[in-house]
Amino acid sequence: MAEKGTPHFIFQRVTALVMVPLTVWFVASLIAHSGDSRMELMEWIAHWHVAVPLSILLLAGFFHMRLGIEVVIDDYIHKPDTRGMLHFLNTLFALILGAIAVWSVIAITLIV
Image (tube, rainbow, N blue to C red; front, side, top):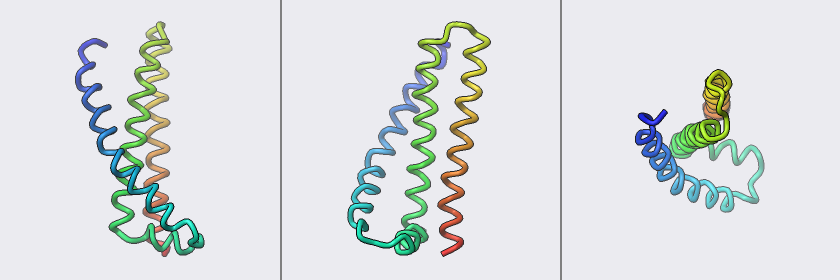
């Protein structure tokens, strides 16, 4: 476990740095579009200059979540078999949610 500490630390900081401006952009955009209908929001998301940063925000967020939960698992689960299973489930959960989220953005861009 000790040999993977530095890359883990760097990935966690990089994903946080990526997410900060994208989160500010997304929240400001949602506030600006607060009176829009559902269809207007979908049309806004369908633009490539919105869909791409939104997808990056989602992927970075789920990867950051996986890294954070990994630290919690390493700190509090002491049985190696249980720890390994939880790491697998954590990764699987993050992959599934990330894929669903990005697929949703892609579906919106293709439908609208």
